[in-house]
Image (cartoon, rainbow, N blue to C red; front, side, top):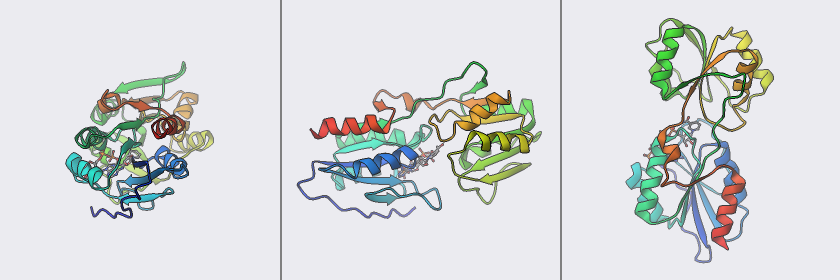
Length: 263
Ligand code: NAP
């Protein structure tokens, strides 16, 4: 993918030059907040996966860096002083690259990582370590299944032939590797009413979700609870708990971290 840089090194008076690895609502909100802070220059980086991404205030670049080495090179060349990984909790590769690249470039790394959801009393969650394990559970269950996963994760479900899937994504791909499915293109946040309606309309018997955390997509979990539906909950990847990448849970916490360093 071609990277489109719209950012050049800042004037000498800038104290902090921060690269925000984004692609999430929090990454967007953080960029908007930090763009207003004196002495802080930011550039947000987007992977370039969504067709019409929302671009925050400040500079924005799009596309991969070319692995950890490419990211480290970018950090040096753009004279980045601080790296903030505000990508999705399931964005494994870029998060691992951020750890390696910050170390190579010798700059501090902070992760903005929203808290995981915790099962409530009436939730009927079944844990799965990854999409493959979730797919195997679906194969055993069959029926009408609501999948809220990214397009890259759908191939894990390709061998499940005894289910009708309803798949919701921000951009519905042209081809879906599932035998029997209906795709819905929609961007959150979704309300509880939206989710209750969707589950009822499609006669859903099982929900598959990643433990993304946050409010924007939590309504489906609440709706499943109300309708007493089981949820296959895919647990977060190990990188989300990597001690080399300290984390704070909210935009306000990260702004505080920046202010501490700016003082
Ligand atoms: P991933 O598997 O961790 O990353 C794959 C590759 O995409 C990375 O190695 C990197 O390419 C490039 N990349 C990812 N995020 C980037 C960013 N913010 N800026 C520049 N390059 C980036 O990532 P993913 O899970 O596919 O997620 C892609 C984007 O979608 C992320 O920005 C993430 O925040 C967002 N997102 C992901 C999910 C999810 O469930 N995974 C959900 C919502 C939003 P190079 O190696 O070439 O640098």
